[in-house]
Amino acid sequence: MIIGIKMLKQKYNFKAEFFDADPMGVMWHGNYVKYLEMAHCRLLDGVNFNYIAMQKNSFALPVIKMDLKYVNPIYFNDDFIVEIALVECDITLKFSYILWSKDNLLLCKANTTQVAVTLERETLYAIPSPLKNALLQKS
Amino acid sequence: MQIRVYYEDTDCGGIVYHANYLKYCERARSALFFERGVSPLGEVGFVVKTMQINFIAPARLGDMLEVKTKLLKLQGASLQLEQEILLQESFTKKKSKVVFKAQITLACLDSKTQRIAKIPQDMRSIFLNL
Image (cartoon, rainbow over all chains, first blue to last red):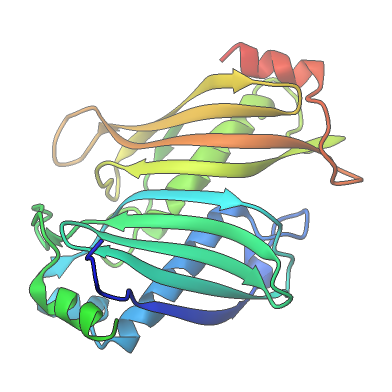
């Protein structure tokens, strides 16, 4: 956590698609991960530093850790919100996520940790400055 | 359970897309039931309550993976499993290493009422014999 800087936070709307629902009519737990990534990608688009920009800067950001707590099910066709917040942008990049229903029912909580690697998969041990600057300027 | 990495499992970074490891874990849990002639979705079913995941190393097209499942805790209506995915071989290098590890808490639900239910004895035996 970088002390003294208000961390970037955004909310994005999604709908539970047919292909993500399981035979019980709810979103299969593994598919939540895709919506976390979609929120993450929208946030990066918003700071003008998406995966394509990372590739142009010769690095990638693989996820190395993730935890999820499933609180209430998301049913097929439900509208829901993914609230994403930047938690750390230093050696690693950490985001927290809260999924809400339209009626403010808590659906899921999650956290991800990413590290920067070169395109040859060598660890960089710090988030590259162009991304760090883009994220912190919007915070 | 052995799983070969196919083209559709990989992403545009050329490695297995991280969400797909959760599919491999689900398949391995289902296989525990299928191999013993028990349906994983009968009068009761299991839902994932929590997951703590470590993505340790990438797997690539053609890799042969092995999913290992270990019981950590078995309670009346819930259980905790550890699932580990090992890379057994690769077209490029011969090696065996852990690429993924997760702790997963599952709750047993009555399929009709969707309420918490006791884990039936035949299913308990499956988990206890892991």
